[in-house]
Length: 165
Image (cartoon, rainbow, N blue to C red):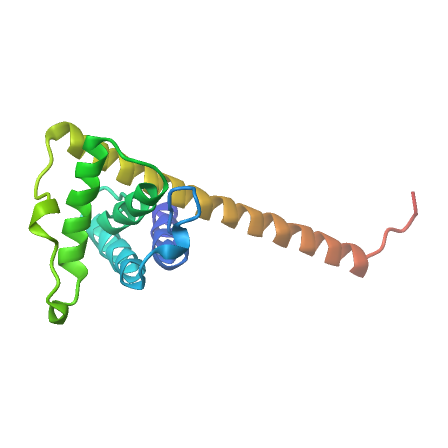
């Protein structure tokens, strides 16, 4: 029970501190601000859904950000292009400001995926969640190790050895 509470707290902290994963290639700094905010809000909503028993995974906005940067780095095949357009449409329509009047253009709007494409999208979202939690866990381990080393060094300076070796 205590471990599940600790994991829940870690996931909640991760909403705000986990990195936004982008495709390697240098386009990560080109993510629009509205998408960064959408990622945080969707992560928070995902945490709330897990309280009701839903399995935690990466979010639509995270998948959109990853595929956005991938599309700027290299050409995509048909299936991944369809997945990207589907998720971009879904995320943009959910988070765009209604006052802008801008919608996803009809000629590139993808409203559904076939079963294989949906499996690929779900695998991507699971992978994104696994990778970002791995980064968080590695960071937490490094912080604990550093704290232990600092405490050991402080103890050593406070209580010097009786006999030098």
